[in-house]
Image 1 (tube, rainbow over the protein chains, first blue to last red):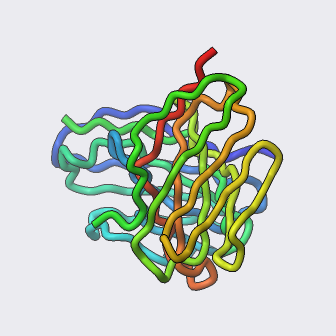
Image 2 (tube, rainbow over the protein chains, first blue to last red):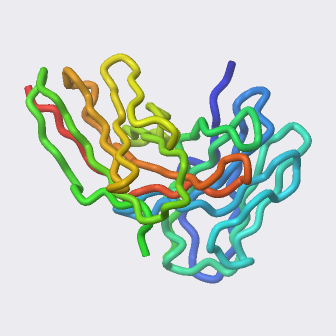
Length: 113
Length: 114
């Protein structure tokens, strides 16, 4: 059973650019959540996808968007990058919607210059 | 406004002694609480959880206590081991079945001293 993987591990972008981060869920997991972890902070919920539909969203602007594919892998897209978007982006998968135990990937560290 | 607060950014404990990590919350609707552990360059790993119908949950060396009237929970690690050195996040949710988001605290960095 493979764990949650994310790519790329690190990324540097400039302000105004767009970025796509990818997540491969743990085998059999149909729910994926994305989190942003700024330096010195805990993870902040961005949104969750369940069976390819958005299923809950945190306080993030619409320029943060996502996709979940039929194989339950997922993407996080951020448009018009701002300096404050620099953070560690984590995805977490769970077996069922509403299951408490989420399995996190190692994250993608994004730096916006 | 922080709904989940971990007021100690760091904690140092001698190996073999008890580590106590504290967490306070403000939202009385929270009914499920989790602790995650995070090593550098890795994602958080689920450690232990407790629902609001209980006041204690134990799993090996890890015990979580919940005091609903005080809106306080704590994680006890006994005995502390070098591998316990990590950042610990407290998290809470109002109703997982309603797909409410999980709210994390800022974390406490635990150092286990030899």
